[in-house]
Image (cartoon, rainbow, N blue to C red; front, side, top):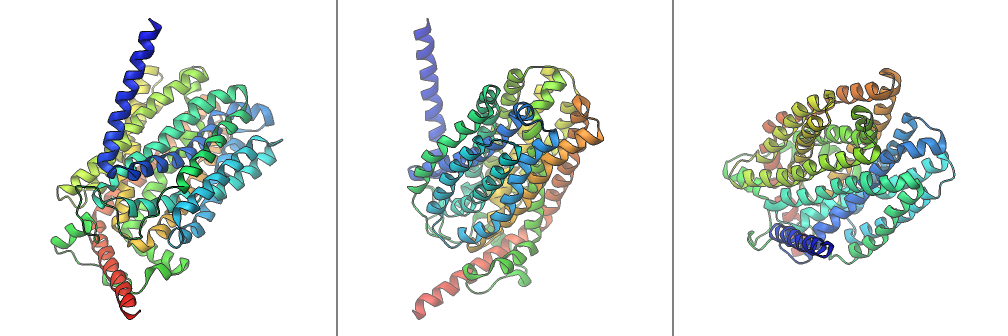
Length: 485
């Protein structure tokens, strides 16, 4: 009987693997493109696994060092704060140096930093270790955004981001389930479990080919020529003109960080996408840090059951990122210029509507269903937003644009755990009720973020046309330079 069961599970695993790899090959173009998607997903997954491990280890850390919810939140926040600051110089590097090698070095250093966390003798040493970890994790966002833009066809970027961001969610699930359970035995062992895969991942990243900048590698069915994205071609066919005040001239790669940041923040849709995304990640950071504690107290269940519940909810989130990227790309492919933003706006609205009953119900089954749907909506908005950002930004600025976004997003993620913990302890009196009302109040940023996406529907078309014009001028400048040489 056991042999049949093992055989059946083996067949199921091979079937699932063939289906997933087949979908990835269709989206990415196969070969090393597929490997790149998996690698990027694993890099993001390692980061969220670390954050989730801190949250899942909250009880053990509190007992080991005698600390409060606010201090637990600070462990997550300090990493995000330092990461926000470090992301800016890494954005410059992403636009100027070999990105694959830089990312590989960072991931290897990441593993060393997590081993240092595991060796901390007291809370202060652990806090210092988290600061160092924040520096090395800051590189992932800008470098991966730049590589995605150059590796994959514009028409597929939403789906590619869906798979990449699924890695974030799977990493969070790994942090809650695997390292969270390991933490019940030893929180130090939990950090070691995360550190060891980082070194193997660094080797794989090192071996990835470096793509040519500004020339997206195409899937077999995509157009052969490089140049404008699908959204930019659609804007041109509709006769949408650029904003003349925002069309850049000259070699954009040599633009300084300050000048680039000023331009990036003048693009109205980019501001909308930056802050809408940051507000969503703000709420998610609070869930990652206090989610296990909340469901344990809300439903009166053990940590093991709470972990299983969050894994169930995570299924909805994974389906959401895959569906959000696919739907956004499909709408754009059918001629809906705002298709990616519409997808994100509707998904955000769904998340808000479902989170309200999810927070206030006391029934485990009903609460799990609402949480599943809310997680679907919250995660479905991210891939189309990430793909849309590449449509409104010239390729030479992708790294610096992502670093500015990472700076704002990391700031929101840094504030969230401390605010969640402080509000729960000091405003609502702690305990089950404190966390419940804290989660309810923290839905307000989600409402604001979704409202911003709806506002972006009016500015996105012209900003797409402006990015296309800036790209043309940059290519003309390079062409003249080569001719003169």
